[in-house]
Length: 340
Image (tube, rainbow, N blue to C red; front, side):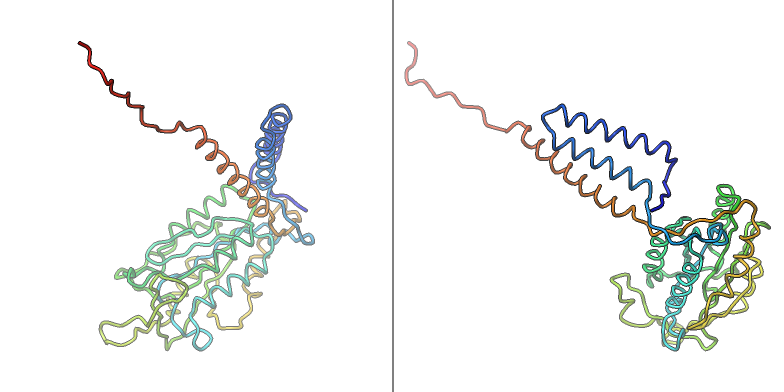
């Protein structure tokens, strides 16, 4: 078992053990033994959870452990165009590639940024593989009725700020960027170029999805997993709207980021996308081996949540018992005699 504490272990561990010891002492001396033992268990579970325990595999090379990998995923309505793997939405191919890349880079620090009308950081940089997989799985297109056109470079400022923050926090790591989209510019203005300082990006790629013939796009009503009852309509023609890949735009984005462009098809491997990034990481000074681990902190977190719920229930019960009951004041009986 290995640990990856969220803060300095030499600070977290003594504080946690001190809280546990205080609760145990109060349980030993006081009459309310069970409540204080419960609080001791809560403090212990929280401490272990914050230590982020996990079970690891064999030692990994620093080539992947020394990477910050940023995924920029298009979530405009066009990713629902059904021209990937014959009749599947492009988003399925994007998700499959992101998961495949992450699986090939065990121990890497991953981040997910989606963009449509605005850029949203879906997942900050983390080494938690499970969190990344969950973020990718729930990724969906924008709601159709709110779609107003978007720029293929709307995430430029967000990406730049995240790259700069990553460089400042961990200058020893290489930073890799994967841009996934179809290059379709639907905003009325020309896209602003990516302006990334030299040295911020060590590798990555621009991955294109879709065909020149294009495909119809299912609506996204925003309710449930079903994308919608029908297809997005083209107001000018009165028929189903068609989205087509713009490889010229995607090549321009690749040149701006300084990474290669690749048109993706179902069944394509990702090994060729990763070799430049791994090579850049392996050249970093001071690299060391690390371990990929399956996170177990959530198990202890669930236990702490259960004890916290018990504590809250017990507190409310005691509060209701201590609350004074509201009774009407007694009305004195009227005297049967009048004074003379």
